[in-house]
Amino acid sequence: MATRRRIVTEAKLLLIGIPVTIWTLLPIYHLFLFSISSKDEAFAGKLWPDHPTLRNFSIVFHEQHYFLNHFWRQFGNSLVIACAVGVLTLAIAAFAAFAISRLRTRGGRFILNCALFTYFIPAAFLAVPMYKAMGGYGLLNTQWALILAMVTIAAPYAIWVLKQASDKLPYELDEAARIDGASPLQLFRLVYLPLMAPSLVAVGTYALLLAWNEYLYAFLLLSRDEDITLPVALGHFLSADDSPWELLMTTGLIYALPPAAIYYAFKRYMVAGLTSGAVKS
Amino acid sequence: MATLALPTPLDPIRPKRRHLSPWQIWGVVLLAPYALVFLVFVLYPVLYGFWLARNPQSYVHLFDDPVFSGAVVNTLLFLIVGINLKMLVALFLSGFFATARPWIKWLSILFILPWAVPSIPTILSVRFMLNPEWGVINQLIFKLTAEDGPNWLNDRWLALSMAILVHIWKSLPFWTMILIAGRLAIPGELYEAVSVDGASRWQKFRYVTWPSLSTLYLTSTILSMIWTLGDFNSVYLLTGGGPADLTHVLATLGIRYLRLDQVDLSMATIVVALPLVLPLVYFMMKRLSR
Image 1 (tube, one colour):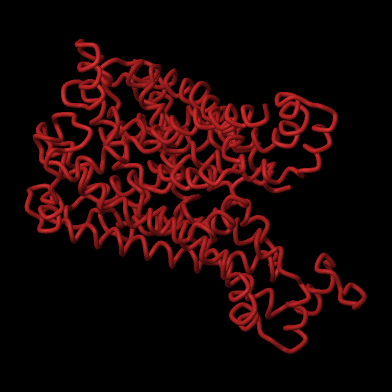
Image 2 (cartoon, each protein chain N blue to C red):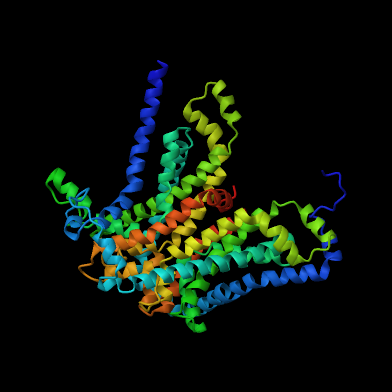
């Protein structure tokens, strides 16, 4: 009886697990399938190509298609912008969280509420006024526009997570450092940063991935083929009637791999640092 | 440890008096970068946006545009049907993933993939899967039934449903993870106690899981609604707002007006959405700044 009940339980779990696996993997498998298929085979609706090929990757890497003329340039743009956003967000958020949580600067609470408010503005709604303002500042069609926009979007959550984490550090540390005559900057550099390292990794990765993955702001703020990031270039594929979908999917797969790798590499930090801060119950 | 007579950090007098100048000055200096970012890239743009939307005539035009009323209906469907469906599935799956089995642990690593990869390639992948002639779904339907499958993205309700499904596909892992964390925080003794009393699975959920999880569930739902209002990609990259601009949501409609150089209509769309957004934002601000 006991074994039979166990089998039934396992079967029920499998009945959930199998559809969940198919649902999760289908679009990603389809992406992969196209990247290793020739155009004819891709369009034939096969579940595995008769002649798997790496030709699509070769075409993308050698920029041998009209849509791919600036592939490496755009890949570089994505990389530079993502790194710049990661570093800038990290610096701005660490400074702010330190000032709010450790130095107890007057007005810190107000700034924190401003940040939270920004966090809760739906991204597509802020995009329109941001686009107009960037035009006014003369930043439109420069990569600084995208970097600054993404820092604006990433910083609030970064500040919130870092503030939550730094509230947990014992205040005796600050007191001891003060009694030893440490300056605020020494306290920041020698005590605060080393203790906050795990949260800083999580927040830096969060900002970097957010910028790498961003489509809407990149699509609005940049326009020249040499300036745009990879997701915008992917969107351009749709402008033709007979889009080379197999190349689009290959480029998409290449574009999707770095963030997935980073996510899994830092998963430990991401899950601990971010899920706890995402929704405070 | 607490026997040391150090002043508690909550003591408001001591830091102010003894460390007034250098510490407070440094605090202001370190807060300045973010304050500057907020002023230049949030406050000024938002105020400027309201100024652009000041003309009452814009709203008359907006309400006359049939695309607008369609977008309002679509947005509400997205929020009410889409989000609740997503959160219910996430609640159910969080129970599944909280079950202790090695293979479920492995599956949970795979399950995160949609959240870990950027949305653009996967949405475009789905878009091709739904292609009426060459997409894998209709080819399968043809092989199995010898009949043509539906033209998925060419019918308003079908296309909107697909956009909602794409949205769910992308964000389900995140909310499931949040709810798993919530479930794992429930003390095991509670379950043991009701097990002794002979509680059924449903009773365990009803009297132990749900009371501990309901606040988190509600917060997650509200936060998800706010984020979904700003979800541009799921609709724009899947349907482009089509067929005939029938599947727009407010997020894509605002951007559409912007691209058509009708900034006043674009901002008016956002202002009209504010009665929907602000209560949700107020709720979240209240909750987080306790």
